[in-house]
Amino acid sequence: MDLKQLEYMIQIAEENNITKAADKLYMTQSALNQQLLKLEKELGAQLFVRSRSNWHLTQVGKIYIENAKKILYIKKETYRQIHDLLDLQEGKLSIGLTPERGTDMFASIYPFFYKKYPKVTIEPLEMPVKKQQYEISLGNLDIGFVTLQDFQKTKDTYIPICSEEIILGVPSSHPLACRGGKLGERLPVTNLEPFEHDSFAVMQQGSTLREIYDQLLAEDNIAPPILLETRSCKTLYEMIAEGICCSIIPISYAKPGPNVSYFSLQQNPVWDIAASYKKDSYLSQAAKDLIAMCTDYWLQKMNKLKGNEKAGYRG
Image (tube, rainbow, N blue to C red; front, side):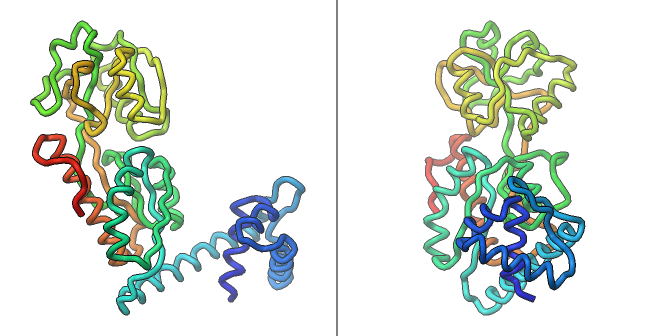
């Protein structure tokens, strides 16, 4: 069996277009088409329904691609186990990073990882948590670094890194701001009911933080007006700091200062920062060390928020 041929067919299926697939594979369309025709002749059936703008899989094609991915996944797992056994310290890791915080973390830890594993290539991919979970389930993503609550977890494996409190931020001009507190101090506790007529900035539908927000509203049986939906936790903080509206945010996005007053929430919402990978898959030593570095990074960051440490990842 030609494993490169499997990769070629998967690429065509992912692009739904042979020209785009050939470009991604750095080969000519003619050469790729010859590979496809050769395979279809061997199978005695077509893998794709052809059209000028959009190719899609036949029933035979769906079976072939599904199993081709399984075969390549087994190859990847096998090579990792052998590399660890021989202490080769080489290979490739594809990792998922949540927008904003994930890339900040990666920029901090990667120099230390590279120093230890110069022959291990990391492919960092920025994507939302649910997209990471989907790619992990397919075996396309080796590790996802995610933030979520227990009810948002899939059947794949999760390694806890730390927990983070979700807090309420209100502008200092808000009538109830005087009841709030400052970062680094024990925050006053409230539910969201006193703020049910205030406008909120929230994360977009489908995000893990939005699901937590919606759950809090359901528990308080309220529906505050939504002023803004965004993909950015930084934007949530900025909307509060500018005096525009209220929001719930992870505590790591909160900043000290006179413009924002903070509350802990009565339901004590927290989410887990965790590393996730496909259930029963092999975790290489390089992957384990990467997770350990990420754990150190987040523990230092959370300690800093509590006023226990100075900023900066120390490796």
